[in-house]
Image (cartoon, rainbow, N blue to C red; front, side, top):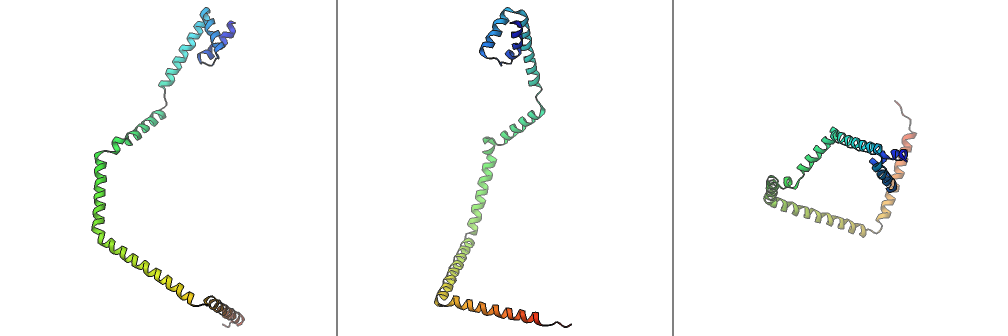
Length: 167
């Protein structure tokens, strides 16, 4: 039993045992000085390793923590709602409103010109459709003209290819 419990001591310190094995180690260590001493040494070693590991934190972690703290400080609500930002926002709004107020007659004229041009465009499109609707055979006329142009182009290309170049 002594050797069996001795094998379980490291797992006991690392809290990797089930309840029955844990109870077995605890009961045995009450009566066995050697196992109790080894258990105490393992616990001390664990604490020592933990303290060394905890103190030897890599510099990257410290840098990451410093960057994270800086980001939090810069994005804190106190910094975002400082008087400087409130004043700058109010002043910007005042400047924009003033520019719009000064430019209001120009903006009004521009809107009026735009509306007039839009009205003229709609009138032209309406007139084009009215003319197209007034000519019942417009599509046929366009088709015949296209055929005539294609025939003339073909004849011209054939004539050009048939002539001999001198030079």
